[in-house]
Image (cartoon, rainbow, N blue to C red):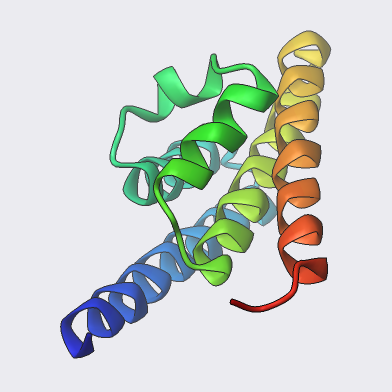
Length: 121
């Protein structure tokens, strides 16, 4: 169990660092770099190409997260990274892709909310 805990903590640290750097880049007007870093965070959590993850339906993304049995903190960071991508897409004027990503982020947030209300096993 300690190995799994160490892995989760490292994953959270890596994802958090990528998201922080992405937010800094976006704040400096470097939307492309911000999008790349947010995508890396998502890919790290899901173990898949972030471009592929961005094309999943919201429910498919949630199913993938559930199958991965990811820690809630990791899932929270996935939601934050997707929301960052929404901001980048909106800034760039891609409202259709931003809407798809917004729906994905909403589905991930709903998953987190449902986990919070489930009784502990």
